[in-house]
Image 1 (cartoon, one colour):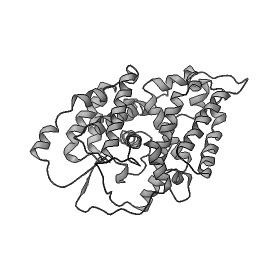
Image 2: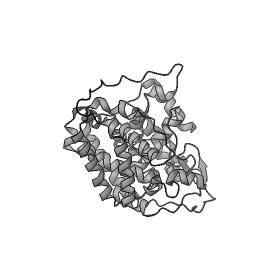
Image 3: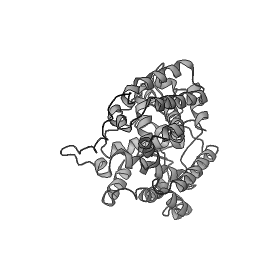
Image 4: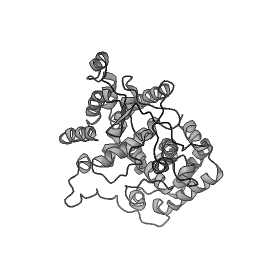
Length: 355
């Protein structure tokens, strides 16, 4: 479905403003559009509880139980696919500037890749294949990043840098390429396998030749910062980043982008599985993959992190959880945050409710 989604976006996304639904109101948190009126008694009676299956899914620890997580992700993917047929939606019109941030300016590589939706789908497919490649996994330093809870943050940063390098508005917030990769002792033959997979995915997505050339040029430009050449001394692993003097943001208290990305991953998976929460999804743009990226950057930003939100106020980039379903979101978020420092969880929930 990710291949189909990317191909549809690249084939031509209309940036024309969609009809505005004047009878709807936008509610805060970059994630909620609800029709006027209170929820019914039947709705209200179910909104205070979180289903056992959602609770289990949200609490999965990818480091201690990868098999269970894989099964949960499979269920979430099936739910997302099924929902595409029953959750159509017309989105409110947005400014040309906001649309350009989401889909790209005409002629840019970012636009040719389908904007943030297309890049997220493409990168997710690449990451899944890289993480399963035997040549790359033979390097234990690389495999560590595939097996542990850092995986969600790793994917987020790769989408972020690819959006940035192709001309998107996102700012890359990870470590410099050489600092992040040289200590992994990546050899030239591993880079060749890496690029082979990359070009296989370009073929799967049916990218035009000029897009493939542009993406290859970006990847090749990073090779010298990632690969250890013959005779080059492998540097030690970088030390954890030291807190900035006086920094006291919730973002830092939560641990930064990696634990936040894991929280977003768990929460979005659980909400998409919960039939009580009608989040609009489709098989083209608003997929599990893109919603996780967009929600992660939002949470990082509102918690005081350096991440830039792709387009605030652009409905297609929001979770769009209805107001009446907020008790479910809050209950699910509390479970999805169980890996975060206990003292920070109430503040995170409060920030979500305020934004």
